[in-house]
Length: 257
Image (cartoon, rainbow, N blue to C red):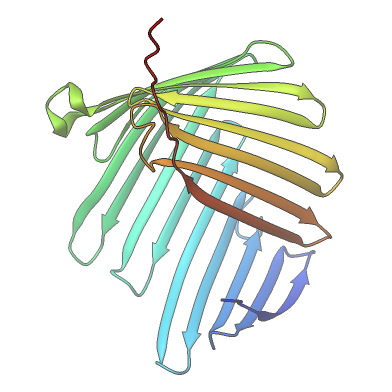
């Protein structure tokens, strides 16, 4: 399916106003109004509306982004569905970070989700602990830039609702930079699923990548995947990706002398 649209943009940089309207082949009229640093310094407001003439359907959303040197907050309001609110905020100082997220159903008068996270980040490494899904899924992650060519990371998760070690997940990953235009990545988890990826920049705007996912515990079954992806940037980006399942057949032969 090919989706096309006609887009018109009107902007007034002096007041930070951008008006974008689009008419898609799905017969939908989308309108977006942006006000950047107009209401207050560091505040960006977005109003998004959609009108479907065929079904008379309508949608309206309000997004707010507030940035300061040590503070970043976002608020997302769905004005017609619910209405509902989702927001998050992050504060930082000297590499230490702390954040929280909350979702609220205005009509039902109840909190739908909440999460929290703390972390420490410097150019050489990053460590974080998160509690998501209403503080039921906990994760600890670590990233280390070993040198200019090698990066490594690990992540452990635990689902408190599982009530057993079956809810524990472990992942280890690494990235090796072959040269300025190519790199390889590898990852494996505690379920024995290994992933490999290779990316090559042939020239500015043209990138080709290959990947594979192999279930090491089901080598003889069709549980493996291979994929390829190419991206071309002509001022606008064209991306093409293909994937397929791969079955590995192993045969053991007993030889007696």
